[in-house]
Length: 110
Image (tube, rainbow, N blue to C red; front, side, top):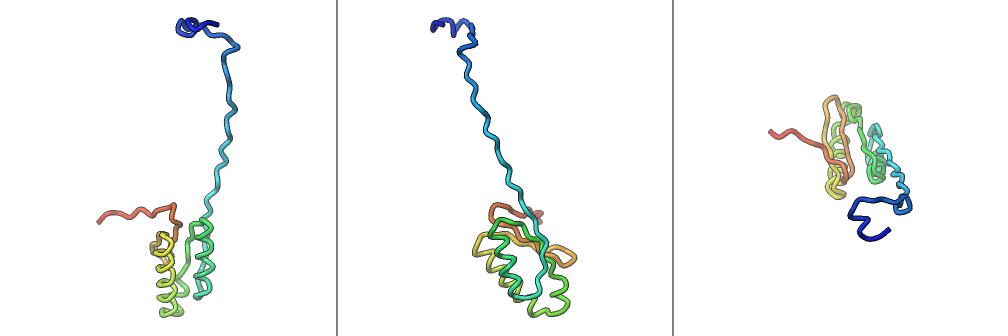
C-alpha cells in the first residue's frame, strides 16, 4: 500500500487496528438511613459521609425527647459539614440530609 492509496480511499484489511475497549466499572453510590440518639451517633454518621455515602438522618425522635441535645448534635454536624465541605439540609418530617463534597444539594432560588 502506497502513500497515495490512502488519499484515494483504498483500504487494505491489513491496515486496520482494533483497540480493546476498557470496561468502566461504575461505583455505586450508597444512601444510608440513620437515626441519631446522641453525640456518639454524630461521629458514626460523619464516618459514613467521609467514606462517600449520602446520609438521610432521622432526628424527629431526638427532637421530641431532648431539644437541647438535638441542637447540640445539629451544631456539631454543621461544624463537620463546614470543615469537610459537605452539604446539609433539613427536610420536613424530621429528617436531615448530608452529602459528601462531590454531591451538592440544589436549593430553589428565592
